[in-house]
Length: 361
Image 1 (cartoon, rainbow, N blue to C red):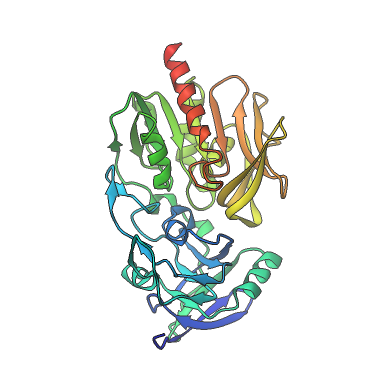
Image 2: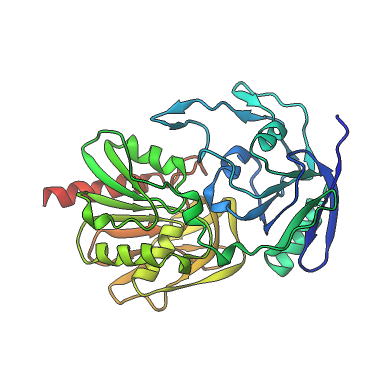
């Protein structure tokens, strides 16, 4: 193992964790959150929903399968959720300097250095996670070579504008035209739509898509505080006056809920990674889901023609809503993720079915 420089994680409550550097040796700041997944760090690190956050992996060994190739399919990277790393920093217990995988193109350390993202290993991530569970997400900073930086709260910024597309983009050439409102969309949402005979028009977070001819709207996931995206909420409210199908995921669930009269609040420590049990309301059916969000929708203030669709088994928080008569629905979890492995991808089929029914009508 090569000799690594000392680097520190300093939390806003004064707690200091000292570790060793394995990524870009630099100082950064952000919100410290934890992820409970055993695998999937290339997908997590490129998930735009982690923008402004320092990610702690609770799984003890990270890096053993490297990172995949940059091969593209349909004009987007085949094995990543976006075109770059979005986390501000990565903290792990044990980093594997040796990696082996049939599709590995680079080491995790090399990839972090390419993207100028710091990584720390040799940290007691169990103790750190217990601290975050007790106190909730804490602001923190990674300090290299005593180059101090101020604490940074990502909830105060419009993060979607930093991670979304900057102009309208068109993918595919299918029968159904879907507008994808990009507030930080994961590429697998795009993949799941494209393989269902769609033409996807991806637009920025504040784009007025009412000017487009479309068959349905997909509201994507994304980072930060949903209250920051007033322009998106206003555009959704316009679309809700019509009858064309709308499907929201994660942040899209919160934004559609706000547009429908609901409100949001921040969870104590959020829902991130795999194995989150979700029940469809009115049934005994439970799904194992992947999630990544720090805010949640309060459904008590929803307009009367809306109702909850899914509920989290662990803490009874909302996991989706639907309109009682129009083809509008959303999920707080990620149906495009491979959690069990594709337990809820059928929701994309439901969405396309709604589009076909609307067009037939």
